[in-house]
Amino acid sequence: MKKDGFSRKVCGKIKLFALLAMTGVMAGCVATVPPKPLGRLPEARWGKIFSYSYDITEKKARPGSVPVTVVVVNPYYREEESILRSAGYSKVGKGLSASMGVDTDKILIAKGMRTLGPYLTLDEVIYGHKKKAALTLAPKVFITAEVKYLGAPYTIKGSTATQAVASRSRRDFQMKIGGWVFFAMMEPLSGEKMWVKKLQLDERELTGFELWGVTPVYTKTYGLFGEVTGSYISGYKSTNEILLDGKIEAVADYLKEMYPIIMGKFWTYLDSEEMLQLKKQTVEIRRLKRY
Image (cartoon, rainbow, N blue to C red; front, side):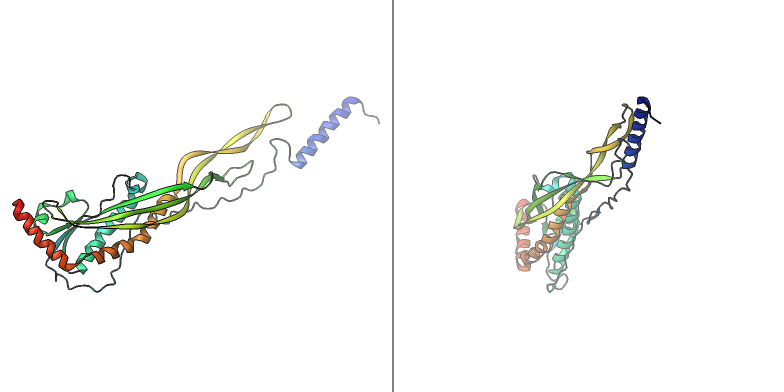
């Protein structure tokens, strides 16, 4: 039977629709593929607590064998232009300061001296302890960091054209970190500096990455007659939510490497005879200033 022109056109369209449906290329009819798993978000290795410790391996003096009492103050870490002053690194700074307060106290005791504290800041030291002590130990810490990003951010996707799952953006970096530690013994009442040691820290280059949240951008798809048939993910935009800041971890790692060096140097710097001489100078200062 011979088909007329209209019948041939209808059959042609039916065959075309059938072909597109089978091949899955018709807009809005992309074959569904299970999304690739994105994987768990990497956890910060340091968590929320930054702490360090130092084990004294040197021979300890008899407790109280050196008649010098020292007020111990946690190191001041919020120096101008120090990275530890920045809000993002404040927990690292606090953790380092508290750890050094504990360990400088331990070292002074291991050297045979008596201690008072440690205090969080100089302002918190009470008058009675200032008067009782011969010296006040008040260190400072200054840390610098230069960040160089390695290439542009790139999106880690866990989605297909028809199904979106959590996605994020990653950016790698290289970080050069250095700084110094300043140890100072002061006369407690006047604040006169009587003993100063400055330790320059070696620079290190560390690498890491940042992870940021991103959200998919959808583009509509249209059928043969202009109707909306679906959508697909055409890109991603940042949510400005940082999921993991590797720069903080890099600074914490650097300080972990430097910490035994810092505390080991402090042990070396402390000389019992020198502290006894400083105690005599304290008596002289107080006599002159009539404390």
